[in-house]
Length: 393
Ligand SMILES: CC(=O)N[C@H]1[C@@H](OP(=O)(O)OP(=O)(O)OC[C@H]2O[C@@H](n3ccc(=O)[nH]c3=O)[C@H](O)[C@@H]2O)O[C@H](CO)[C@@H](O)[C@@H]1O
Image 1 (tube, rainbow, N blue to C red):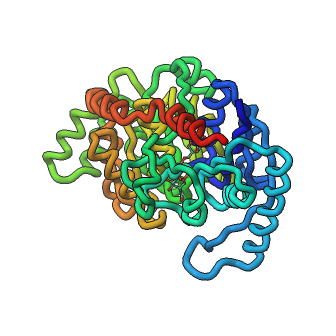
Image 2: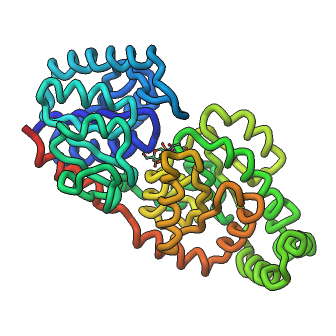
Image 3: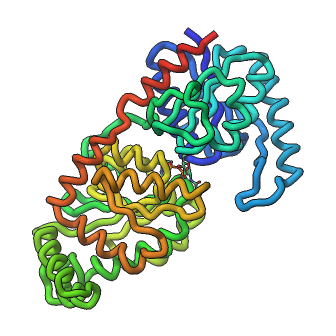
């Protein structure tokens, strides 16, 4: 039995795979802890998850755009490595696992300088900057995709994206989230920091097509009039009319929108007139996925892997600024599998409403749900834990 240190932080996409793997290792009798940035999101998540946490300084090696790194950030990164060396010299873990992102760097570099074995996990289809710095001395790299750009295939093991493999029964999840049992439940989630773009566009789109005069009054004249207004040409319009009448039945709609903590007040005030629209800063994702019938999301790997595990059809609006547009690539794969609909950001005004209406049909959703489950990353945490155990000194 060994101590495994998870070096991670910054965003949910790096933190939650570490959490899932930590729980798997603990269930095998190992000890696991998170090493990340002091005061970062990872500190809060570790506490919520009952995991030990050690915080150090961390600094970004690249600015979000292009350009040279900020020298103060480089100094912080250096201090972080020194602090992580002190922690790891004391704890002497059997292996340090790096999940990428600037907050994982101190732990991984410190381990390598102390000759403690390191293993990496790359969540995206292209090796990230932090991982590029550490890959040469790492024993193995677990990946979420078959091929990872910039990574020697001999070093790569495709394990999948570790997700929290927990499902709640739907009623329990709805209760936990203070949602009702009858309505079609749409989860809006822009990634771990929220998405300003989705925050600005989704409420109004849903208000227009599903608002109090819309779907909520099944088959009302107002609904049909709205559909007539929005969907040209005639053929499409008829299709949507059929879909809507099939979809609503006795159902109504409710929305759970995770805005990201900083945007919450603004979105909450924008949706306060819609009692079926619930905004929250950050949501318990296991409960939210367990309750959702449909999701509107960005296309980060973690989000899409969770949608697949829970069998939730997803309308994806990839973040155009993601490194080398990797979110577009992620979303295309999901769409090709039939598990979701890709709406490019520039086309949201024209296409998002239509995509929601298309998915309001239970038959359409059932097909997409099966396709999503076909992509489930079930077992990824266990496969990655196997790889980690294989590298223990
Ligand atoms: C802007 C950016 O570069 N995003 C990247 C980042 O995304 P980001 O950090 O947004 O990560 P993902 O979409 O991969 O995952 C978000 C995670 O946060 C959780 N969550 C989110 C909202 C909430 O209210 N509650 C909650 O628990 C989700 O359940 C999920 O586990 O890392 C991913 C994996 O490296 C990349 O694919 C994304 O492109």
